[in-house]
Image (cartoon, rainbow, N blue to C red):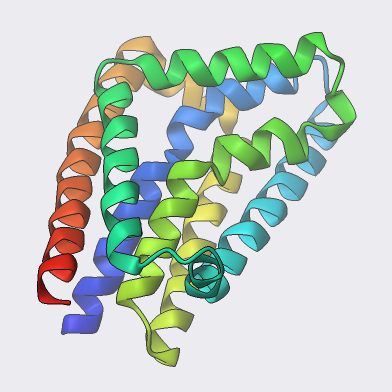
Length: 209
């Protein structure tokens, strides 16, 4: 039961952080002028790239932290604060504006061939928030079985993003501006609560060690 709760928490955290529905209009903006086949290739490449990046941090996140001498407690606090800032931006619709600026920069610099890697895979899908959340979750899912479950959660989240890209035009029309605004704010509140929990766990780790 504890593993089930941990997996559910990981799924909610990563799904909210990645925010697949919020990526739909950005994907359309980045692939403007492309046909359906070209958009499909961009979506697949971006999804695979993001999955590889997050999986690396899920497997070797602790080792990467140890390399820089960072304790898990410190990272939990820092990562929680970062996730809280992302939640703040989502609630007040600042995150979408920032992402749209990243998309605009990519287009104006004619990075059309590379948009699958940047900025779509990194930092729009596997951004600092998603990477931080992955490392934090990996710290609480240290057993081989739970680590495999975490990779499965990452796969589900990335697959959700790919499906959203695949039906981006329909999703954007279905949600509309009002629907996107409501969904983003709701997910932001959930992410804020999860971020506070990460900070609390980090402080608890500092006190007990």
